Length: 333
Image (tube, rainbow, N blue to C red; front, side):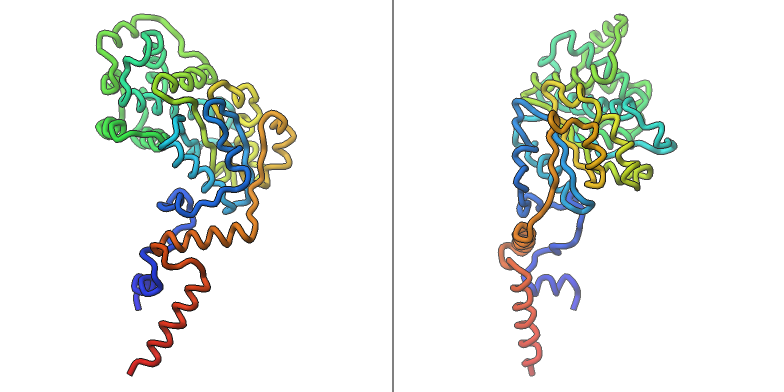
């Protein structure tokens, strides 16, 4: 019997255990079990707060992150995920705050440009368009296709119109940044004017504050930055290395308490003890993800139900089906 036939005979429409990666779980919302602190981590999108969640590897951090991503498709907050790190050719000692903030600024730039495609550049004042132009030019001029696609995939609120616009932009952007920006509503005459005015984009915290502020004109009440998979790149196999990697951001209280912005960190629990010495748990709330046997049982049941169109609710039910199938087979002439 083929595996697909076996699954069908047991009542499943698809393999309930085909993947262990929450980012690949198509039906996660159907069997997600909220930990007791979920609503505190999600928070109030009108007054976002940064939080840190610790859990063992495979303990559900990414599933929790994924749940917030899915909520962002219906709730009014701009949501970006920072879980891809361009570390090729770098040493751990070279990963500083500038490295992280540059990457986050780039993602937020793509997020705001994506919002522009739906709402229109007219939502912004001339001064705001000017600064957005300068920031976009700083982060996207010369970007390669792979890096651009990573930045686009980090934005969780992409509309179909935004996807269509980005899909038109293939290959390296290079010196064609002005042409790129015309796709987002910037007029050639205005771009020419911006190019003649000497102006600075500001440091990365200033850029992040500006970009988060630009979420409001497009109907978002706040901006969430979800930070995950810190321990899954070539530089961070050890817990101490993972902590060193993200410490430049974790330790920057001014950034984590920025108005209208909430960082949500999903970290390996082996980082917790040392991280608590500098992360100010009194200001940035910490949570430890732990599952009770009852919650795990509920999660398994909901997972089986989701993949069997409500037919299979437990492993016990699977054993009964298997025994029935075996009995029918053995009694056949």
